Length: 287
Length: 330
Image (cartoon, rainbow over all chains, first blue to last red; front, side):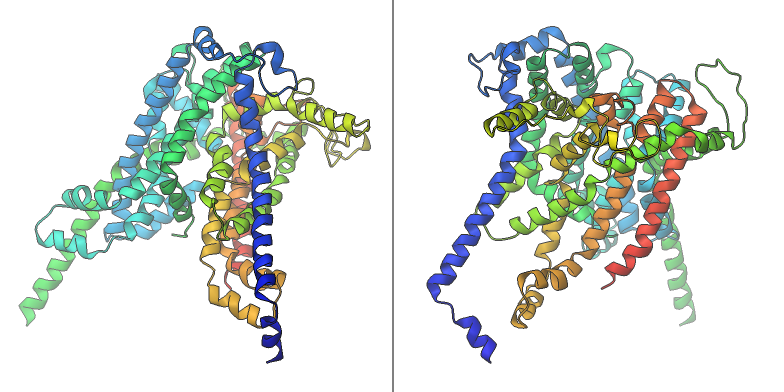
């Protein structure tokens, strides 16, 4: 009794100040962290507009803005080619991965068969295999198949994903089973159920997986690094790496290239973050 | 009755057999890819690790049994790089705690939460080569903005602080020696590995882990917290006894994934920012495997290292499950 009276004691004004103070303090901390997060990006953008000699100076703003730095990048390296390669490869991987993952997820989430859960656990276990273990044999496989330095070699090995299967299965499990039953009674084939009912209802999951896969493969580094030999196949990360190694002293141009590399990702994220946030949170739910 | 029951049973059996074939058809594309690019390679790499296979064919191919694994145990570099890998993982607990703190701040009903969340997540979506190149420039000891800021502050305060050499320095906060597995006072300070840790925390703190904690925090039943408050529990006590146990499954997942990621991490940083140096201090196991396989073409030896890495990850995950599962079952 006494404690409750004690809790109710503070005047409304004090409670109000307490709450407002807490809100202000929270905003201060959050703003500080946001500033720390943004500062390197701001430096990058400013440096990309500076003449080279000013990059080394502490003065944050360029004395004269040099947007032509961006044009110079295209003169020095085939940057448009890198863009095309990255987007082309990432788009193909995304399409194939969504299709194969969705089909596998349908088998795991919507069909009854012996050994299903055992096979699914096997899939999950493969998520633990370090990438480098499979990287070496896959490289020798590409050597044998003469697919080194080819689009097919860059795309096909990345087109299958245990993670994608897992993520889409989580989404498909939430669709009521009565829908398949009804369709089956109407005489629909499994492909029709999959394509006309389950796929449209898994749209949110598919979009999430597509964004993840696209972003991941747009920035993919290890596999293209060992597979690509000729310049015309270089993707953005590989092109950036060699640009930095060979022209490393032109910090302003390298920053301009970095900005152009990052911008599509930022736009994609801002547009799609609703799906991404949900996907990340759903992906962690134990299957 | 009899024929009808028989009919039903037959019908059921034939349908379940149908679904099995259908299921395998649906699974086939993914499973083929899995067999060719994951399962096959894993076995192949194990087999190859028992040979001296060299892609340059300068040495005749030979089965060498467990010779590679013996050599690995004697390989001083392997141990140094293993310790590098572990050292770089020291940022993990800081990043996870930071993600939790941020998530708690964001889980209050404030204005502009989505804006903050978007800003904090930026390093995660842009992580990769472009970001590493950016940080390489930031860490430049002569004209990078980090040292410029340190020098400016030091000058303004009348101090004589010597700014760190960052990516060029072998020194580190634990004083690990360069050529031997031991600690020496000479190496104490800030160096390349610490620079990579700081960058790693900057990247990870507002990333996926924060989003996971944010989701978990909204799922903590409000009545539990109110009940504890009614019992007179303070803020810290509520967090320690109510919120933290409720977050256990999320923490467990994050810790397991961080270990798996951390043990095979450090490749991009080493390749893009430091070339594994200075003096090999930022070479992690994955980068070591890369140099052995794709620069020296010692496929056999590289496969052996990759299997040791696999084994370490496997054991660590098992240990996590064994101890974590107890924590989680609240």
